[in-house]
Amino acid sequence: MERLPQQPSVFVCQHHSCLLAGSAAVLAAFGEEVAGYKVVGCECLGQCSTSPTVRVTPEEIWYYRVQPEDVPLIIEQHLKGGTPVEAKMNPRIHLRFHYGG
Image (cartoon, rainbow, N blue to C red; front, side):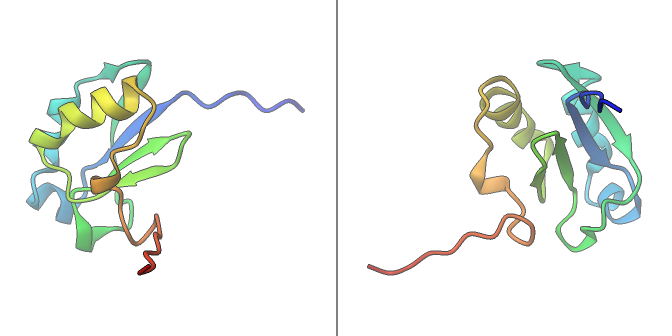
């Protein structure tokens, strides 16, 4: 059976911790669809300590502590430009190692 391609989506957590940290305003800042990505308010994404959380698929980029003022950069640089916003990538999921040199 051939697997259907997944529609590109932006999931904005709307569970308790994220809501308390302002995720409703983050969801509103994204709108309903942008640059071919469907924007969806969703249940808990399991990253409560770093909320509000935004997950972009199919790339599996997870953003943390997203505020409404972060949304224009995520839209322009990532959703339209194809380059994730490294400063907002959740370090618990996107591990990066820095070596002195």
